[in-house]
Length: 267
Image 1 (spheres, one colour):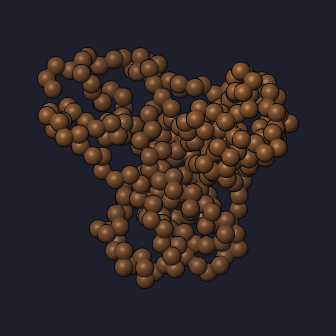
Image 2: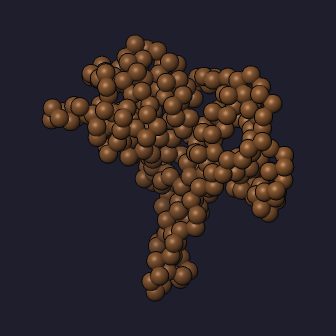
Image 3: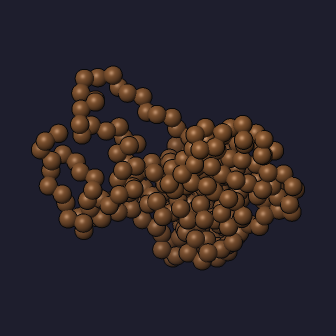
């Protein structure tokens, strides 16, 4: 690639990467929560892969119990902040909302979930405590969503947890691989901090198999959880994919999210 487009001004880049779904105001969240029918056998909860009790957390927003709302969400899904921004809710919880059958707009579940979890971050709420020590220790390979969720639940059960992460920062796909207009890295890293606050030891820049042997983990820990995430992207096998300036999507997004916008050139 020889003819690069001229770089855009920083203000224009910020505008183009602004939130695709801006946060609700407190009044808008209260109004939206009041529309929920609080179904007993809620289809939205069944449609959620992590089975968050959607009517329960929405009801708590409607009664101004923001701490309780965030706790319901994060008890079921420790990555509730990220999922509120990145989850394809239109084919999951919102797609299952009973209001669709009445030709009405579904409840804005994702934005309400974001409203509650953002409150937890903004107020630095400590929603969970580590359990009584069991004397057991667990090694987790990979500090992405699976590894971090596992770490939170293990600490709440009282086990000692050490997480080994090859990249410089924890968070995995949430930190490095979600489009910038959906979620910024600081949200993912704030989720990491909530897990660390439970007493989880996260060692970044450590590759299992190179910096520490798997045999060492088997010797030093009672159990090992493997959460290494996505493997390498498959090539398309087409002419030109190896030319300079041609990148696969995740590599491009990772560079964009780990460098100033002006350093990611396109053309």
